[in-house]
Length: 157
Image (cartoon, rainbow, N blue to C red; front, side, top):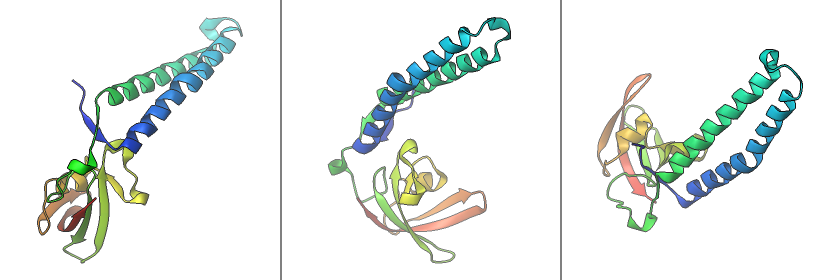
């Protein structure tokens, strides 16, 4: 059974646009490349044909995965979020208890994560460590460099 994912309206829209692009434009390009390679002669020794067929197969896998994600996607209603604890779509301000550095992240679904804009995945080590925490709680997060303890300073939308 596929895993249910929780997304923003913007995140769902981006996935729908990508799926449409793959199905309408990229699929036609792949089919055309296969047909052109097929016209070049003997298929048993045609590396261009093999490469085009492989690219077509990879595209179809990508389309199928995206369709599965969309089929199991759930839209998160931001008006129903409980701001007393960290959850998906909440913005959390945290402090590293070792060096007192503060950071602010919004927890989002895996494919909406963008560290440059302060969005981290709920499936990331920090995201997992913060889920369910309340203001004042401490979260021990295991990262490649070891264990870092964060204190939840603020939770907002």
